[in-house]
Amino acid sequence: MKSSDLAQLRLRNQRIAGKKFTKPEEVVAYFGAMQAQDYLGALWAIGLRMEQATEKAIEKALADRKIIRMWPMRRTLHVVACEDAWWMHALMTPGLLKNMGQRGERFYGLTSPVLERCRNLVTKALTGDKQMTRAQLYEALEKGGVRIRGDGRPLSTVPSDDPFLSTTSRGLHILVHLAHEGLICFGSRAGKQQTFVLFQEWVPKTKSIPREQALEELVVRYFTSHGPATVHDLMWWSGLPGRDIKKGIELAGVRLEQLEIEGKTYYCGNGTGKLAKTRKRVDLLPPFDEYIVAYRDRSAVMETRHNRLINPGGNGMLSAVIVSNGRVIGGWKRTITKSGVTITPKWFTKPTLEERKSFENSVAGYSAFLMNVV
Image (cartoon, rainbow, N blue to C red; front, side, top):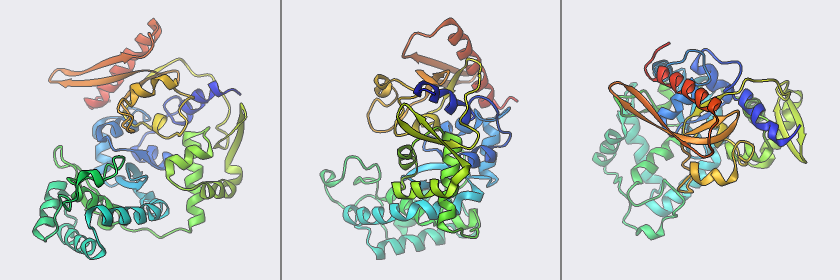
């Protein structure tokens, strides 16, 4: 097997090609977690891996508490199956929380007494299955005596690589910190506004599982859904140290396959490491799709020279891409009007006639998803 085969295997194991799911929660549970900082993109990321999916059906799964949008790892929003939310939170947030606490106190003056006041105010505001927007929670904090707009320190003292630390986003840092503690998460949308809820009310706390069992489960799910991938890929995706990943691989045993490809060691789920014929296809992937974002090394699916085209700011904000047979060949943007949706491609390489036709088919599929046409 060659490195050029990785794209084909990942395309199938990511369920972009081949067998699809029927329910949103099945997709999300299969992946373990799916990046979701772009809300509408996350809906499509789930939908493109389903049979006859609609945007409405994905949103209903969120409202019905089948899946949940939360911060389980890397200080980044993901969608997680509700049945997995608590053990994933327990496994991956402790290290992040310690770091956030130190930085929050240093740059925002969020001392232990201040954070305790925030917990009490937010808990009081949301208790009873209430859902509130960010602006409403900010108002509750301000009325309770907690400032949400920084502590007066100059912007030059704030690390430029940290999106949660600026003199104008103290409130956001508070909410993200409380989310990492397991106090709050996202509920359903109120119009176009996201709402926050109490985590334990929205998803009743489940019985904890031993850390080693959680490690094994996380490792198996990642390599099954994302494989073939490396230890470093999973370290990047989960934020866990290499020793934890290697322990998880050891615990997984025969649930995983090990592949040696051009001198590098890759892992995938048992029975998922064999190449199979797939029809040629062009797919529209949303911003931050797992097919792109979930790997430290993305060279198997895109040329290095295209990195700046999907991440123009060099800040990790990945745009939507067009993928042909597993390789990135362009980007795309959507425009929604009263008459429907228009997809505008930006080709990185000149597409063939076959690719253009397949692109149009994918556009039609995405339009049906948005218009809730099954």
